[in-house]
Image (cartoon, rainbow, N blue to C red; front, side, top):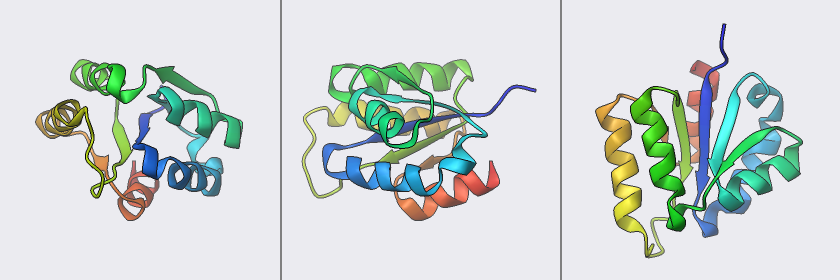
Length: 122
């Protein structure tokens, strides 16, 4: 049986929170195949020792790469710690990723509470 795949994404202001969450949940995350955008995937991998497949950074197309994998059916959930208080220059890409997750009925967590629910129930 293939492992479920979780995409990890975090805006700059939330990257440290993602690292802390991944550290706290490293044992559970071992049960999943992980991928993520540029710096987020690198930071999580370095902090936890987990294997995290890296795509481009979000502003350079990483959000779109993950969206394409959602459409292909190869991403089962997304943990996207977004920063609602900071304007993002690639906001259209962020909205497109959120939209594609809804279209394909893929759970997407935008905060720690929901991220916890996803890894406990996926």
